[in-house]
Image (cartoon, rainbow, N blue to C red; front, top):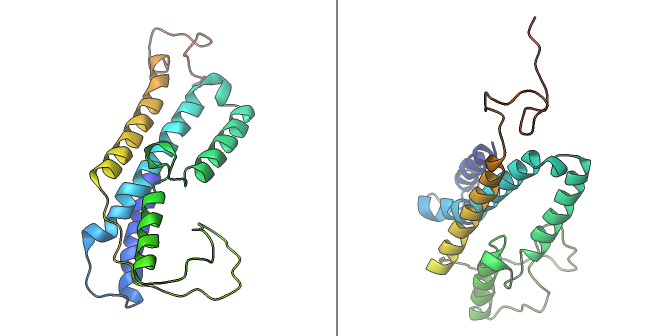
Length: 183
């Protein structure tokens, strides 16, 4: 489900580029790279965490929702730091690339730090030329490691998940939470 939403966003990016007349030339690799290298690992992490939280008995409750909220907040905010393991949410190297481009063009960066989301500005934004971010091998490996961790997190509960085990009876460990009754 999350992957399909990401695919729709990628198609929307292409449509917006063409509709706004930003460029009639489409570089598919440049267009899809941010989705594959930044967003897709985060989607995998979210999906892995969702499965983990749904399959761990203490976390599938309202208390698990509270735990998830705080974990998400820490990851979303701390994950922007260049010191966060595995490049966090993946924006720090991109921001560093933008800063370098601004410095090369002699643009004033005294207005503050990079911001994702709503930010109050006293002066209108100005555009600058940025040729994009070229990910290095370490960035790609960190993103693959994040996907690998997400897969492991999703698979760990499978060790005790016995829903499809025909030897388990209702009420035993690993049995389904709800029994269906057939007329």
